[in-house]
Image (cartoon, rainbow, N blue to C red; front, side, top):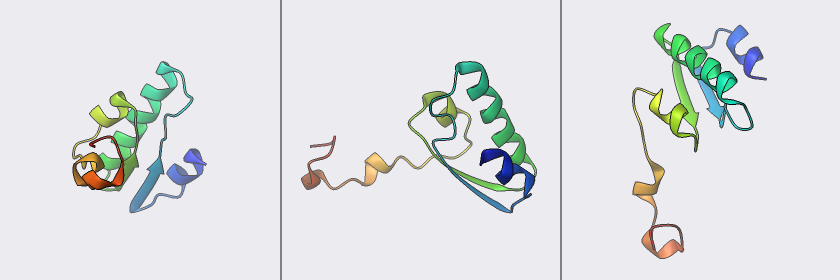
Length: 76
């Protein structure tokens, strides 16, 4: 699925956990490919728990900062 998205040459690319279940080498290749896509004026939006993938991003929105403290989540 990820390769199909790259091949379609999108203007917006939404990916959810693109490096989940991948070894470190393959994860690094995926992160590099996403960065190259972003360098080609593609808006890349990534949802991830992976620190290396998060560090490969240029802008971050940490959803934990918007969590309702009364919701029973991690900020309670």
